[in-house]
Image (tube, rainbow, N blue to C red):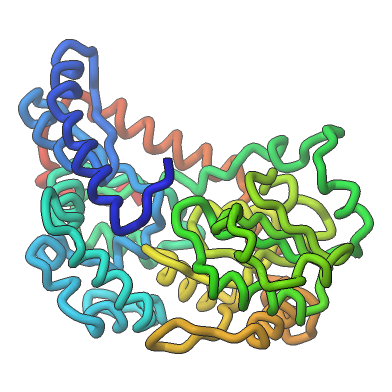
Length: 390
């Protein structure tokens, strides 16, 4: 069942009911470490009672945690005081970066924060998870994010382990000889000419946004395949006559599609994405440049980060209300995928395959993390003499 962002706290509060059963299970289990995510903020409490070490694991990249900053700033509410607190690079980030939220993104985040009127706030979840864990494990790597990873160690004074980007197995992308519905159509498109569009499974663009995106795709004159989940069963989710006008040039799939197989196809020249971390990893692992349209959560930070590294280009939007035009969508698509001005994005994205598709690198990161867990298993102690693993 899908849950809207403003109701997500209800699911989190219900999940907190697992603390008792989890504690009962762990009391009789042969456990050396407990690895948990930010939702399970109560795990350190159980770990302390059982005299076990615990590691916080994040599937989000280091930029988000670095941007949030010290635990005290978050727990005491100073981190989310006003728009300015989110739209400026924070003072503890001492290296050059543009990573921060736009005003329209900050307004949405503050609205979500203020909508949580009961239960445990995300401030407390974050503060407890980061402040009371023994080590932090994060889906990231030094080869891409060294500044941010070192910042996390400086902020929290505990080991931070990048466990690699965890790229999906290549066989999931190539698909072998297995037939799938749109492969024949993609085979007919020119190499690097086609746009793939998807916005993840958690947050969906509004009908107004879908209309402008659709008209932008139409104006771009590029072939495309769109995995459209937002209001897929609403007959008016797309502009009137859109599907007739793009018939033969574009495909709209209202439901699940084999994203890795599509991204891996040689006709794909770029990915119009919400800039979720998993989608970024999949795209750059296949050398696909990004056309960036963030919607919520850490996606705005990811968008600035990818733009900063020139791995993609954001669709221009109004600073305060986030509106945009079909013409800007079309221009951004053509720049990234076919125009000479987009050579830098295409070249940089292709270079990133060396990092994002590097299974050996990810395996080394995981092996290093596993070795650390083995060497320190069963020791319930904060690391008073902190030494970075890197």
